[in-house]
Amino acid sequence: MTATTPRPTNASGPARRAAANASAPRKGGKPPVRPGLKLRERREGLAGYAFLTPWLIGFVGLTVGPMAYSLYFSFTRYNLFSDPQWIGLDNYIRLFTDDPQFIQSAQITLVYVLVGTPIKLAAALGIALLLNYRDKGSGFFRSAFYAPSLIGASVSVAIVWRAMFSSNGPVDSGLSIFGIELGGWVGNVSLVVPMMIILAVWQFGGTMVIFLAGLKQVPKELYEAAEMDGAGAMRRFKAVTIPMLSPVIFFNLLLELIGAFQVFASAYIISSGTGGPAGMTNFITVYLYKRAFQDGQMGYAAAIAWVLLVVVAVIAFILFRTQKSWVHYAGDNR
Amino acid sequence: MTAIRPEATFDEAVRTAKGAPTRRKVSRKSWQTVIWFVALGALTVLVLYPLVWLVFSTFKPNAEFGQNPGLIPESPTIDNYLRVFEGIAGVPLWRFFANSLFIASMAVIGTVLSSALAAYGFARIKFKGVGVLFAAMIGTLLLPFHVVIIPQYVLFNRLDLIDTYIPLILPKFLATEAFFVFLIVQFIRSIPRDMDEAARIDGAGHFRIFWSIIVPLIKPALITCSIFAFIWAWNDFLGPLLYVTSPEQYPLPIALRLYNDQTSASDYGASVTASLLALVPIMAFFAVFQRFLIGGVATQGLKG
Image (cartoon, rainbow over all chains, first blue to last red; front, side, top):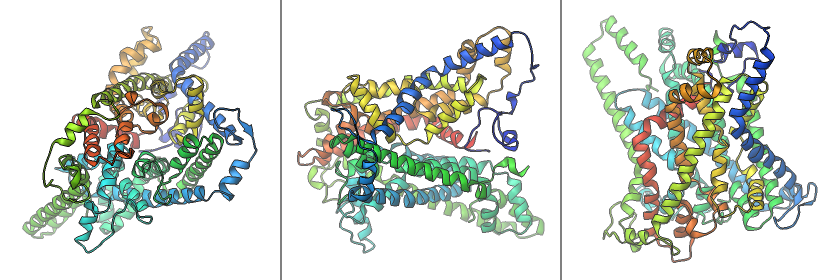
């Protein structure tokens, strides 16, 4: 049950983690020195790289190389047609001191990510618990809840969302039964981000499925033991479910946070590519796209991309650092 | 939080042992089941309502959009479908479908081939540097895609590949989507090594082992990858938005955008109808292969 940080070899990392890991059988009991070993090793190396060749080409040519280039571009003025012109930190300085659009974009993106993701995870966990209560009949509900996560990022759903949340749309008319009159979410500066968050939460199914699989692996004896000790339902949830599920929670939190930063199609479609109303759907990816591909400011957009990367890296770093205090791996208890 | 079943059984056993009335327990249990079904049923309605609304909306005439927020069209019509089939910007609808289908099929082939090869290399061959490379591969799982789009665009622009499908398809053949490699690695690791070792002793090389032993055994993982690769490529918006410029080459998501932002007095009926049609293949895939999809997602999160 050790989610995340998979380790391919047993050479690295603390021994206890390695012991808990699936890579143990790698230590095959071959005698260490034998004639022809060098040759064999070399042949293994060749085979290894042969299998990895397509991936390596992609990794170098489409990931690492482009990353280096985008870092370089971020220090230049570059419009695709003339050569990049080195301007040092100017792009970054302009971003943080002279670009209210960027500041707003960063703010709404952070609100979207930091509010939306916890709600989505809580919904996914809560509904997974509910589904886990009973096996019979839960398969249907699981499928029904999962479906939106497959299509949620599509243009089709963005179009539906825009129609549903427009003024006099189904959502407004539903709320007016309760006496709430909003007059449309799409054009409303303070409602359009909540609307985007609702769209994200609607796609809780993928996360829920992972939680559900995690819940199925919690040993029943733990609940029984806790109950024998007189623990109530809430206590059992806090003392058994949450710790046992913490690797899965960690994994989901990490992936969902990073994924949320990258929301693009829905924001772009809902605002017809403008990022409006008043820049409230101008999420960081939309802003980056507009700068790079509408204004032709490739260097400036590359700087935005690197700010995004640094923010994502910092969040991942913080999560990994705090992991020790709340994530319990099965191996640690032994 | 009464959501966990195991201890309920236990609860029951203890109470019965204590001599508590079993009868009342049973009826309480069945009440809980009723509440459970009602709660989840209500949630299902809420979650699926947008899709149901979409289906019904396709039969509403344009005038009803913004007037009739309800489910049932006041004056149902199939005009939207007729208009949508004609296409937009002089391109018939089937063309957009064919474009999407081509891109998605190539994505499936490329992803499965390249990811399976890479996964075998990571999971089964011990060689210098494999640990570092694997860590790097996992790292790309967390990398925001937007960091590389600008240089990738510059590269494909230099190579004069704009308005071709190559920028969309080539990365799939190079296993750039770490999710798939990781998923297959997990699957291969769960296969005991006895069979490959036996084959080794018989003199089979890695490629032979990969092709005749591993590939047949990892079929479920390959199916999961194929479906996800198809759906993601089918839904992809940013890629074709960047690289596909002529309307007759548009895949569906970009074509949908035409209905949506063209100044042509917003044809809502056509827009929702085309949206629904674009979702049909995905929903069909989901209906047929949901076991693989849900299983794949669950494995991804748990093992490792």
